[in-house]
Length: 434
Image 1 (tube, rainbow, N blue to C red):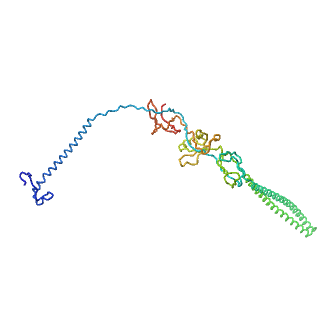
Image 2: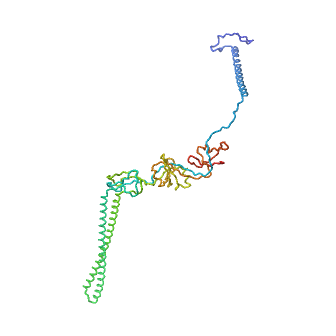
Image 3: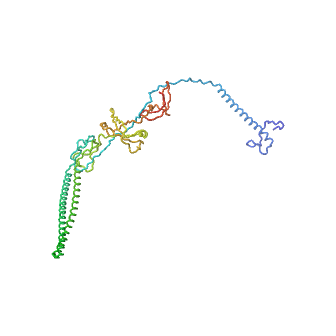
């Protein structure tokens, strides 16, 4: 039981009236319920206070300990600074005038290729012994002969036709000459008849001539006039005949010229000094008109075709490209074959593959004997001239456009402006005291 006056809690046994969850039933005295809850609330407040104080103490101790460690940390011993030395490769560069050397690559090509075709059909009766791949042909040399029998007959027929046309013209001209004489005779006869008629009219008026005689004179005059007109008409026809015979002669001459040309075409000759690329003819073979006999290229007329970048092209364009000298090198190891050349023309369009500009240079004829078409060669040509500049290796220029010089035993960076490339070197403009 509970003593209300002392408000102490004794050994109280659970009431039989409590519900299973430990709470008093609704009919439990309200005073007793209040006394049972007060101890639990006090215990909860004290627990929270204790935990809060403990947490503050831990955090404060940690802060104090950390601050103490910071304040009492040992001083860091600094390393002694020293200068490092490097061994570098150096070159001596003096400001001077440099000419840009441009290196390009290209291919040797023939300036003129020719496919020789048979202008006349027939059986081959002769082939030049040097008409083989690699053979050298001289200008005017006979390469191939075709059987000329049919062409000689055609020429003979053309000559006969020409002779007949000339004979016909001579006959027609003779007839024309006779007709001209006939006109003169008829004109004279007409003049006499007119004079005779005038006399007859005078005599008729005096009664010396009868009317019948006068009429006969008039009839004679009419006949003479008709004869003159007929001679004149015949002359016109003869003149037309002469023109026709002259046209026939011209046709016969053209036929003879064609026959002569066809006969000449049975012999194929070399138009210029050439080197044989391929040959498709042997003695005894029969060729149709227009079939390929051989393929050749003009000797001592080689070119080199090479490509420059657009930047290189622009640099050279200002100083002129056409006529610029260059050197071509063919490295066939162990030999190196070189030849000089001159830029002759610029390609028609930009190379779509690499964006470069194609150029062609003619090689000097006296230096072409050892270089063959199709050879891959290097091309060296001189570019622009730069005054008071340096030429340094490309590997010595660092990012940012600077390189290093030795100043009193130490390396010093110098800013440079790249003007051009010169092989593996760079031509730069830099403020360097030498």
